[in-house]
Length: 349
Image 1 (cartoon, one colour):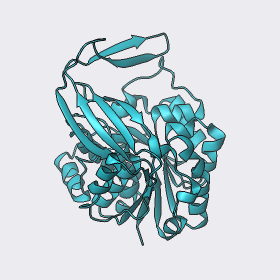
Image 2 (spheres, rainbow, N blue to C red; image 1 turned 90 degrees about the vertical axis):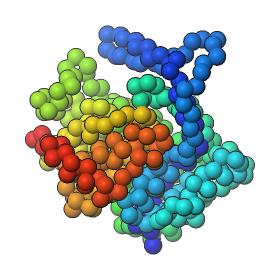
Image 3 (cartoon, helix red, strand yellow; image 1 turned 30 degrees about the vertical axis):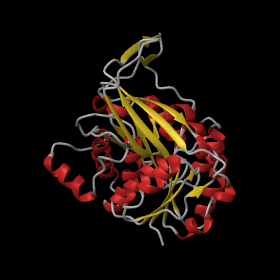
Image 4 (cartoon, one colour; image 1 turned 120 degrees about the vertical axis):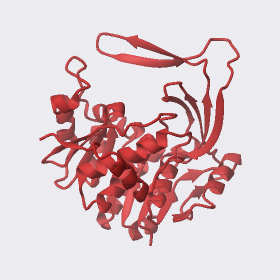
């Protein structure tokens, strides 16, 4: 029996960094957007280059296994050079079962080019491939039934159509569900998301995803970076209340460099970012969400402490190229927290 099954994407990620990249900011009355740009028509020199296996299903499976859980991963790949790289990456990974990986020779494996800026952030050029083609008939439901925990990473394209059946099946068989919503699912509308929320014990979204899924905008005219002084933005509070459907459900909203929030129906929790070097932010969200889920068991449902564990592990990932290269064990996370006793969370009300 597996402790955890993850389902999501599997990709071959190619990281490209160039010192010639520019960050261009564009402001309107209600919005500020930033774009990465390169000289048009020029031959741009690459400063650094690397390739790694990634994707939400893979990243989270590797993290759970690294934290000591017996893990199986459900993802879909093709039969090509990139699928060979993905399968080979699991050969020396302890605690990871690959028997539920779906391989289809008629589709191409997911592939991404990650353009990394000097600020550490990134723009991803993504070819979804097989990741957008998971069908109900592909899923090993018996494996899900035998698991204790199902982690659903963001899914793409037509693959989102299987989420209803997967979550309903897990709920009927008393399998604990963590749902990390992705843009493809959110675009199907709140009524669709609501069905999944009804069965998920933990829901994790970033601020933009949470705003998009609920239709509630966080107004820039009242927004401040001093969240701990403001306690909690009223628009963010409204988003939490709309997303929280189940009585025992925990909702987590990450807000990039501003930190992360959680709501359990009684209290709002805030945890700042665990500071450290930033090389690439790819995989930070996967590390944060999966670590939070794992840490809840480790900390006996201490939500604030679990946010701290998640932030530390996420900081490890962004400190290196690759979505799983900087992952920490529970022991390493605890040592890092002990080294910074001033780092803590806050209960806002």
